[in-house]
Image (cartoon, rainbow, N blue to C red):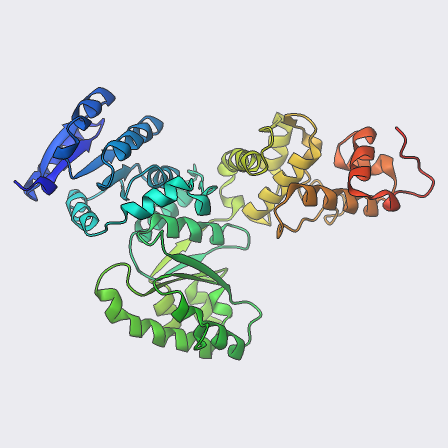
Length: 447
């Protein structure tokens, strides 16, 4: 028996473990099974025996801790993680903690053996080591929520499965549902995660401009980004002539793609329209639809997944605290109710903007109801609007205060009331940002 065929199989589920072990044995692998931490530790004392490992992460955080231990002890040897259905949070964390690849459960038993064979042909331990040393800086805050809504879970299962292919994909959903974010998730979950990821906004581009930027000889993205992933945002906004050129390029790539994963450029499209709608309206050709929509992932609106609002809010508040180095803040019951009852026409992006505002407006650790400036809570629907192009807390805070002062013609009492902060706090922030000239003439800043 060749040494590279010896596999450490870790699973808390005896029936599943026996079935996987039997299938691996049929594929001429030698399998050593372990179910708990003590057994894993004992097996890892004989690291030279194992050339790869499979770990079932059904136990969640405990399984991730075992995975980290295995990654350390089996340095340079591939680890395949088995992930409970549609739990992309767990898949992302498994890759960040040292797994080479993953499979989503429920799975076909032969997938495990086939994936292990493929892993031996991908020696990217050096890339993983470098990424871990940098704390996965590029994807540091990439933590997709594990949805409670059945339809969202179906789409996440599909995303997790399609991520492992090289097929061109289309992400469809309303503005603000997270198409760009899930493009990043998809890229990270793929075997191309160490390759380039480039976004190209197709809106407001003339045909000539798009052709130059995408196919120009010196700087065309379709040539410069190979191998890698190119995300065409709102792809059906491209001129038909550009769509036809993309179809021709992707046809030329078919032979290279057939040579194996990781060859050529993978194309992902995003759109607010389903491909059939784009064709019927004349925005897309049938050939482009067929080329770009090898798989279609439909992301539900936030109004269709209200049960996820508490999960998303908790995730965003955690990420905000980590990003800004602030004390972690929590929502009061009234604040959460206001979030849950809002219409959320601007979807997840609107929820994120609202929570950034709430963090700025809240003085204590608890975010009160008045700090939740949802569209439904705003008197005129236009009071506090944010641009998140610069994701810096001071700029957001200054923008909010400036807009509120302008809306109330510099009246400090009304501004403080709108922002949900005391006059004393407002005084200090006005001085901090040099906004004295926006206050009502003659109104004292002396507390």
